[in-house]
Length: 243
Image (cartoon, rainbow, N blue to C red; front, side, top):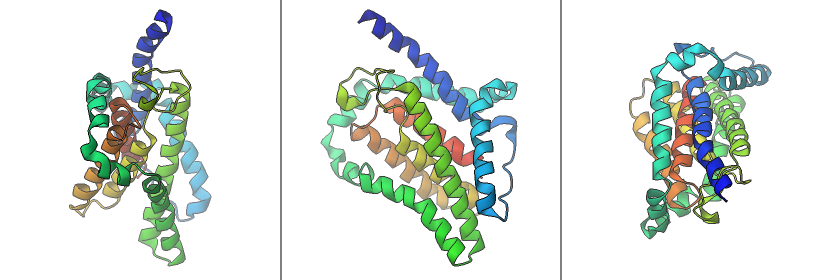
């Protein structure tokens, strides 16, 4: 038992480093994203491959560790682990958030988030609305990147869910770390904000909505605070970079 607890203590800095790997990928070198090509379908797979390669190889590049954003994100992720005990438990046991959880932490909410990119892309392509189609492709690319990063990190971390007991364990076959809902919500939010820079009201809607989704993952008992915070920062980074 002591050996297992020691392993889980060691796993925290390991997954902190893994999180920085993903988080920093969106801000490396200060590069601007490539322009979306005209033939969206033809370019989708190559762009996706390049995005994944860039994300996962970012820690090998010195610029990653020279950028202050990497350290800010790392500190935020590290601090969020301190909230996994009392703070997360208090939220789970607070029944005031029941209505919020039934809406934002539901299966239907997840399906809506996944449907938005595809629906936007389809409307733009079928209706020959170029701007809408471009936006839809950006959302779709971001969503797929979010899914791939989420699944790979979950498989690597194997962290238990809160409803399996407050053991906070990694490498136990769970899928708690990071929160996939938070990654997706913040990817869509930041993609939208970046696509419409001239519409100043959009951040005031997109960011709070994404924040509420992440919050509901904690208050509903599906995730610890560090799962949701890490997922939110990863999603923001993917959305910031993918545009």
